[in-house]
Image 1 (cartoon, rainbow, N blue to C red):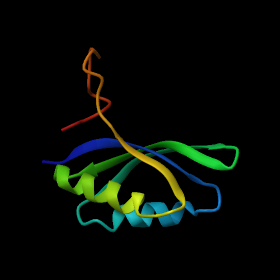
Image 2 (cartoon, rainbow, N blue to C red):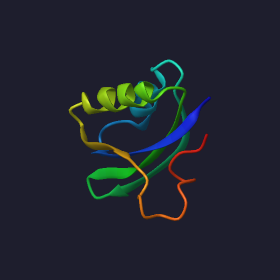
Image 3 (cartoon, rainbow, N blue to C red):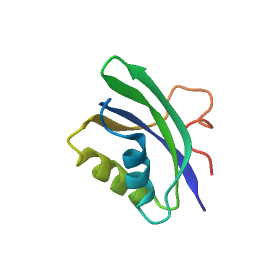
Length: 92
């Protein structure tokens, strides 16, 4: 069973998008399903939707991205416990 999770990311303008995507997909069993990045001055910010088979793969992806010094912030987005639906956060 595969699940899709969202990761919020912010990185410097001089870092290539190809480097970010290839780093994410280097983890076995991880695929990028959605990519929504916006230029905010000298940084890009946005949300990545990644499909993983195990939650530990998501932790591996976050650790790999955080190890890059050109990436400012990386965080996993968890659903709001007060939200009516969590479909946009995790889809089985």
